[in-house]
Image (cartoon, rainbow, N blue to C red; front, side, top):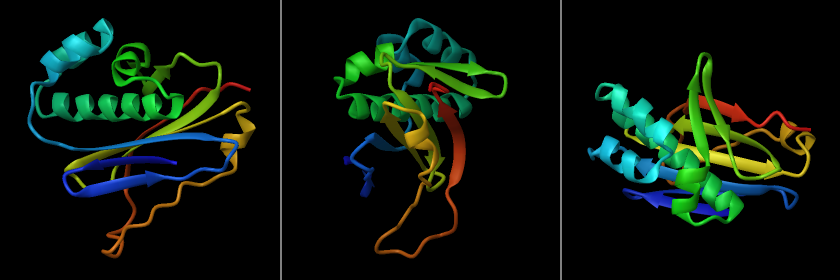
Length: 159
């Protein structure tokens, strides 16, 4: 299991025992995304973010942050190590990631509400263990407001 909370909302990830899971949810509040990225992200990521204009810079910052923190939880890494060593690259066709692990993994970045970003990372010794399980969401106590927006899907493509 993995737990995260932000601005009165909680994300709980539960996975089969053969899987590692990490989740992170963040409220999109204004902050110096370029400055934080320069201090804590890989230099290429910080440079990429610095080239973006607001509000896209802030959105992409939170997408990278939640993804890196979800990897930190799945891999039981301290946050600073994950921020620097779980690297995300913007490529044509979407994001790609490199993580310090030989495990297969899959990740999704979601917008459960326009003012939040949520990342979910699942890891396993075999890619096939990640393929059959579908992501299920449940909102409580409010009824669901419809499907959550998928921002990005990433995979290690390892066997």
